[in-house]
Image (cartoon, rainbow, N blue to C red):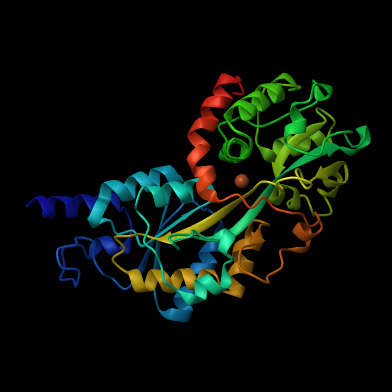
Length: 350
Ligand code: FE
């Protein structure tokens, strides 16, 4: 009785998924409530229209239908945990290394033994236990107002806290996962004390209280409202059109930490859910996402760097220049994200 009840709950919580309609029908899954439909149920925090075309292409190639639930990654992790063995989720997709690591830590991801995936995705962009695989990456870099000149002595993230940059920096809120992951990486590299002092130093240099997002901070720097900010590479690539080019032309970029640990990168990635009712198809789906054509669609959709080996990013991304990325393990970022939030709060970086 309890199982039947839970099956019904799993069905309701699944919302519009086709899999739901078959709940309770004969299935091969023993006492598993989630039906084996031969489809792939995707729990994702990616939200690009081009992804939909990709799923359709996968269905055309393989005959396997893709059902999708979109939500915030932490909500999806909680949902998969609470659905437990009845979860219809086959594949978990998110856009932060810390959350990939948290999903793995939460025990919701299965190790996948696929030569296709381990051949295509480099070791530094996948879980050592192959429980998740990177799909695309982005770097968080310094931008500055070109008209005011390249800020002397600004070569690292740490330099942003130097007193000479007082009144010159604008940033988005510390609640952004991009800023949280960055500070988590600094904790991993330099320890909590230095990371906390850095957050305070940057706050002391703010030209205005944190506001907007990466896009609006790019525009603020281009307009000279402030001189310096930190943004993700793909937002800059969005200004590579004739009308928007003016914004990009007004901005200089610095890949931080090139002489030290490398520029902080974050990634989107995916893993097969441990309780996946359609596991074989879930693996096929991940293998498809690592293929050259899918990698191009995934990366180009958001001007990111493809994770798979030997695939070039868009010309707008390539034009930003090449750089040495930080090779810190995502598990290190995941481990320190909670502390990073506390340090931001202590620094009053709202
Ligand atoms: Fe973004």
